[in-house]
Length: 240
Image (cartoon, rainbow, N blue to C red; front, side):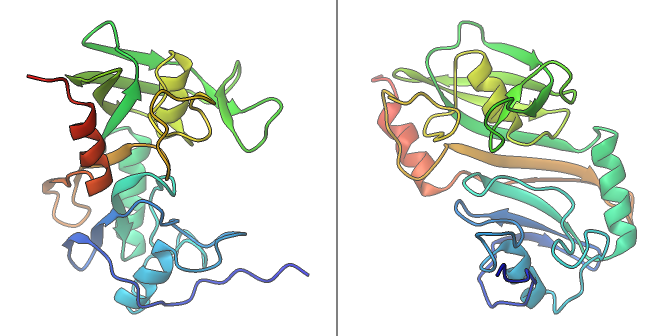
């Protein structure tokens, strides 16, 4: 029989970039799931947060997602907002809904983008035949990704991607839709990548900006990509 999913505190180290009485900014490592779900009943960010915050997290997300304002994929690393109380959660959620939260990602994508910047404005929904995947589909939810070339590499490009919407797998789906999937992406990348990367996509949420729900202060945080990302960047750099 299916086992009930419950979130319980676990003493798991967290990389906390900022914390006060209302919220946390956490740098999630690659490989960590955000909240318990079938197949990942524990060892998640929520389990770690329940231990660290001693249960002081907003309840809007329910018992399985306390404090979770937004999510990033298991194999995407980077910055996440966590609300400690309902007031903060409502404020941060409203900012995300109004597209006023600044979210920027770094990604290494396959191939050489012709232009130095561009955007993908295409609706995203469930793949029509593979329900575990997302896709650009007519009638999907509005989604826009702005991208900027940061460095041209050997057979690849380092980009910054900025989100105005936050759909599931948005950057991965959008970049794959224009022929430049994220390097190492096992779902949306090519079956035979020129650079097979074990361990998932090279995608990192490196910057987040928002208005503090209690003080009204504009907050901005950045975190560099993990060592694995940096190593691939060095490996793919063009000779000077």
